[in-house]
Structure formats: structure tokens, C-alpha cells
Length: 292
Image (cartoon, rainbow, N blue to C red; front, side):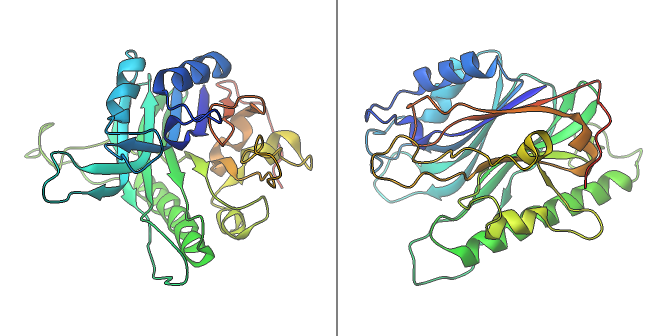
């Protein structure tokens, strides 16, 4: 099972061209047609973003991926008098696996008046992996505010703890609540893969929050599970002259999936965004891995 995550910068390449189809095509080719595609910075009707215009990029992604179901969670959802459309900006998940649940969540947005900021969101779906149900999340944490970023990372830990607890103790069945009612029974997953742009380096503020826990953390950094102490290559500003490149795009897995992580790859060559895509492969036949 392959999951690819990529902050696509509203599909704007380093050449300044905005082209949804070429970015999606590269993701499929380089990622080996991943079962799940997690994208950040997807826009709908946002002419203030260079080159984006009034395009509905969610619809364009869906058109480029006819074999996938597409789920969009806007962090920003603005409507203004006189506009025919709402302006939206957020995270997207596309998958060709069966989907059991869709549970997007707004992330904390505590005040930090000293810096620019915007709302943030977790796009989350429960899919049927080869070995069972798994939650997959696509997120993008605060860039300027460490206060907001750490609060958002804590909320992601809480999301995992809560969902795992519900999976362990699911709601009771009720004969009066059929399959077409809000109280219908749903498939709950204890384990999750969390992908995205966390806007901090390995060992940074949000990274430490996500990897914290006693005696077992909520999440493990998938790169470290595969590559040990070898530093993760940078994934942001890699191809910007005179810029300091940064590793900030990660894949996290819950402890129950740690032994399934077979490979984590980073495409350091593409210039189709200001970020580099990351692909994780999870094995159905899980080897034994000692996690410390």
C-alpha cells in the first residue's frame, strides 16, 4: 500500500506555471500509482494566489484521477457579497481504496497577533487497507506561529487517542438506526497514517509533540523507522537559490503500523512545487521490527 504526500503550492511549479494535470501525472508516475494521494495547499476560486485564477482545483484533481474518490477539507472557506463562488483553500485526499468514513477536523487556531496566520485543518478518511481499516490524514500546520503549530500538533495526538479509544469501544448497535441514518454503525480504525507539511524540522516543536508519549508515543516518524539515524533530506525550498532548504514534510504512523513501514522515498528532483513529494510503502506481510 503506497501513500504519497505533497504540498503542491496550488499546483504552481518553480517555473511559475500552475498546472494541476502535470502535478497529478508526476505524482502517479513517480509514486507508482499510489493507493492514497494526500495533497496540501489546494485552492478553489482563489485569484489572489499567483496563477491560480478562479479555477476549481478540486474539480480539476477529480477530473485527472477518474479512478479515485476525492475528499477535500477547506481550512479557509470564505464568501463575500458580490462573489458568485466561495474561496476555499485546504487539504485533499484522493484514494482508489474503499472508504468507510470521512471525518475532517478543524485544528486549533489560538490567537497570535504578532504574526500572519490562517485557519488549519485535518482532512481524514478511513480506508480499507489490505490488512484492515486504516485512517489516513492530510494536514498542513501553521507556518509563522510556533504557538499555533504546537497546539495543532497536540490536537492531532488527541485525534489519534480519541479515534483509537472509539475503535476499542465502538458505539452500540440499535435496531432502530438503519444504514441511512446519522446513527448508523460505522467502521472505526485504531491505526492511522498522518501525512503533510508540518512546517518544522525533525526534532522541532510540532515534531516533538507528535512523537511524544509515555510509555508509547502516539506516532512514529516513518522516515526514522526505515532509515534510522540518517537525516531526512530537505523537502522545502530545495530548488530556490540562496534559500535554506528544510525537511518539514513527514509521514507519521501509529505504533500498530510501525512494523508495516517498508520504504519511505523523497523525490528531490522535481520542480513542480516549492515542496518535494514523499511516498511511504506499507507492507501487507509485516516484518518484525523492534521499535525503541
